[in-house]
Image 1 (cartoon, rainbow, N blue to C red):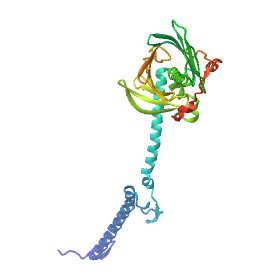
Image 2: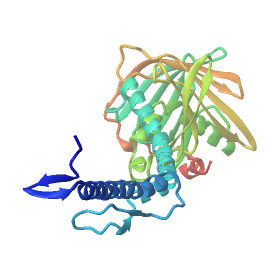
Image 3: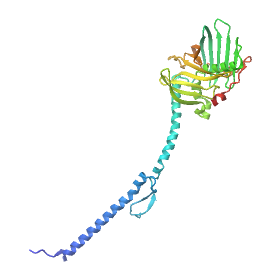
Image 4: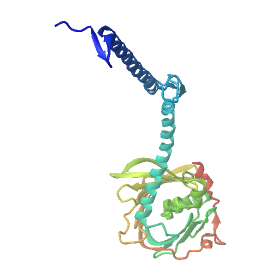
Length: 338
């Protein structure tokens, strides 16, 4: 049977050729519209990728058409911040580096305070004995926050008394049986400060100067060092005493195990060292129960500490120079300049 050349649509005979033409035309138009929309979507997303990957690309994007926005509107690209990100990160890293160093020092000092229990200690009276060759003397050290110190020795079995002190501004000395010149008096006053300032690290950390002028004005952390097989954090203290002291903090016990400084004796610069004995684990506060004092690598004194009395109401006037003492004129400014 021969097929009909017409199609019945709503009761009307329409040529089949016309129907096929219309259907084909509609299909082509719809396909073109879909293809155009797909192209516009790809074109709208391409500049964002380019901006993120290449900082030199101009910071504009083309947004796809919406019901209220024309298809070719240009707006500032949101990834602009990515262009400056390397510089921002560099500044942040610089700041973090300083903060990290400061934070590292604070963490170390907090651990030191916890280990030594010196947070609430405002004054100390320390009793002991000092031995040099065949001579032994009774020793009494007194200290008060933040930088007041005296060291007194009296001969055991022979007549001898010496007392050296520092009132925060000047040093002074009162010596028996010794005919020392001015240079020697200043030298031994610095030695006495070096010995008696057992709580100096903790008190420097908690001092008013650290709060008002910044911790770095009195303390600075240096790279770790090995000392007698121990890994030690090294902190140098300046500003509160007329000497700069290098404190070595054992990383395991968080207690000071060694300290060093230098002091002029006339025209000679003498290396001073203290090898600190372990503390009494049952004591509070926990301070070394003795030390060995070295001058230029040679043992000078050995000190055994027998009693530590904290917070005994040591008056500030106790550190003023007695009427018969000789002032030495020490100043903390000298240490701050070192």
